[in-house]
Amino acid sequence: MANEHLTTDYIYILGRGHNGSTVFNLLLGNHPDIESLGEFSSGFQRFQTETCSCGSKLQECKLWSRVFSNLDGNPNWIGADNYSSMLKYLDKFHRLPQVITRHFLPKWVENDYLPSTRLLFKEIAIASNASCIVDSSKELSRGTFFVSKFPENTKIVYLVRDGRAMIWSFLRRFRWSGRIKLFGKRRKIRSEILLVLHIIFSLTVSQVHAGILKFFHPGNIITVKFEDLSENTESEFERIGRFLEKDFSKITDRIISGNELEIGHNIGGNNMRHSQKGTFVFKHDDSWREHFPVYYSKLYLWFGFIHARLNGYRSLD
Ligand SMILES: [Zn+2]
Image 1 (cartoon, rainbow, N blue to C red):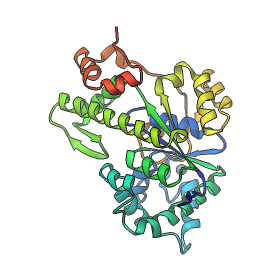
Image 2: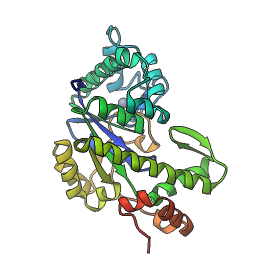
Image 3: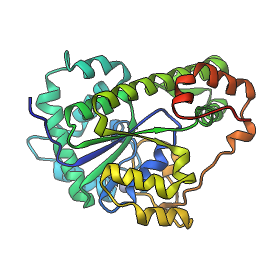
Image 4: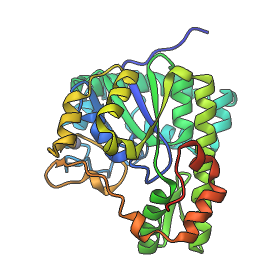
């Protein structure tokens, strides 16, 4: 079967929560030819109540309101309500077997979801004047679906970060709210240690899955270490630029000189995108190193050795 095409190029950020994907997606979105959407899937699923990073509800946002008004009335657009339900169904972790085998997928995927996706992406590209969109949804099933269905348009950035920094970020959220989002679901977890083991398990699953995707689509996926974005900014963005066929030198200059970067029209994801000013300065925060408990560090290095070894995260001393 011939490869199918999207109406835009599509960059998908894969990984686990708290890996820095919101920031990375915003950095990419500073390229004039790239529109960053944030965690598109979860954001769009709440399209009626979701606030865009520009501060407006989607119906009033400069970008999204234009997208919606252009889609309305198009006979091939399934409607935002239906589209949101389809995302809710397809982008779940447990759909992975269906997505990989492409068997047992409902008929509406071909008949309604794909034509609507093409239309939606096209309208986003027109409204933002960009030919490429970046989606930091991170879910394995969504990335797998797009890269196997549209290999000529899809590039996946598998974003990794030291598992301990991620665990620390999860723990801070957990200690504050007692609930945590894992594998796409908000869960109540009884103890911290269970949470830590759960995170280590999910890091291992995503690492193995990214390896499998790389095996089947070697030209479509690149691994980026979040730490390298601030420690080796220039060379890392050159490498990412070669992969995405874009020149990031202007963004690199702004990062290195500590200049402000713009926050576009992102949906979904964490609160960082709701900066009052609409801009942010990219600074690397590794304060977790001072606070991170040694026993959790050992747990990560022992049980999470696949993630730790393959990405070069070693003992702290
Ligand atoms: Zn907006």
